[in-house]
Length: 166
Ligand code: ADP
Ligand code: MG
Image (tube, rainbow, N blue to C red; front, side, top):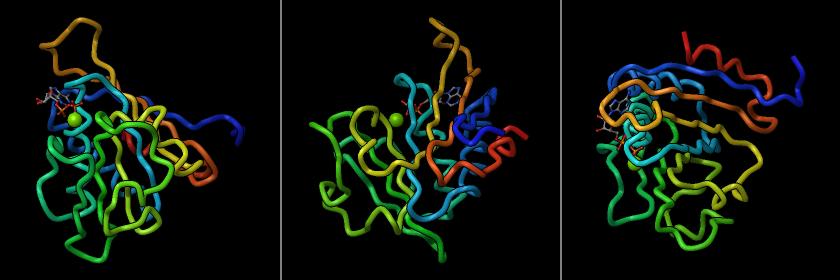
């Protein structure tokens, strides 16, 4: 395929459990230095996906919505990278450097997952995985979600994202 074309996969998710499973599958593609940006309205399932991702990475601590903190570090229980879970909603201005978060881990050694990061964290790296979650417009009861995963930058150019929908 054309390397200039961003690689995308669209997946239909029917329940919170399936969203967790997608997160666990996504974790298998990730390595230290990766940035995942999650886009979707409140209640779309961003944190639910991150929880599955944390399970897949095998990290310590329950992944929850970080209400009082902007970022939380979940160290690996094994040899893998820690998960840095960022809720950029209340982050004033952009994040040009992980140093701004005052964490004890750096981007190259972590997997960083950001909710509400649009327009704020793009400066961190040219390579990122964009995950956009939609639900049927106006429907707040249905559990169906449409998820589009797009790989941006050299890091993702040769990665087969189709496995996520398998
Ligand atoms: P966000 O972080 O995007 O605000 P959360 O993951 O915190 O969203 O919350 C999603 C809510 O929607 C949870 O209460 C979850 O149980 C519910 N839900 C229903 N269907 C789904 C689904 N298919 N995927 C994810 N969450 C779902
Ligand atoms: Mg959330």
